[in-house]
Amino acid sequence: MSRFSSSSEGSLPISIPHLQEVAWSFAAGALGGLANSVTVWLFGLLGITALLGVAIAPEWTPAWLYHRIVWGGLWGLLLPFFARSRGSRLTQGLLIGLLPAIAQLFIVFPIQTPHGVLGLGLGGLTPAFVVLFNVVWGVVAVAFYRLLTDADARQLRG
Image (cartoon, rainbow, N blue to C red; front, top):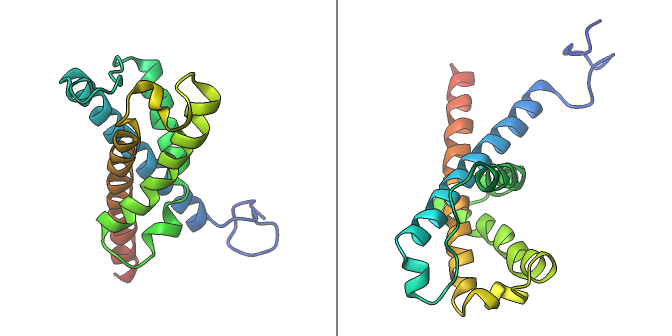
């Protein structure tokens, strides 16, 4: 019997529909990571962050982009838990976007960078920008995830 059979005997511990949901979650999160990256980069390029006293103006490089898209995909694995909740895509995106923002502000900045808790070494409004950028990730990721899962549900219904 195939390892990918539909019977419980000899099958993988996770079904193909579950694998598909994991793939969609990662893809939606990665697309959110791209949207977040474009937003952060444009804010820096246009001088919006600098105008408001925040030193966030990254260079658009493959290494910078790769890191952000992969982490966006990994955070996207949480999408099934948020996208099924009540509320608009905006509300869901706001809620899930707070998770990576909190991680950035309270783990990444103080532990992995010299910018301290909340990234205040980059400027006083850094926390606001971090939340904004991560909400962009959340809204795009939720919208794309729901688009994928709604389309699949329509296809299954016939």
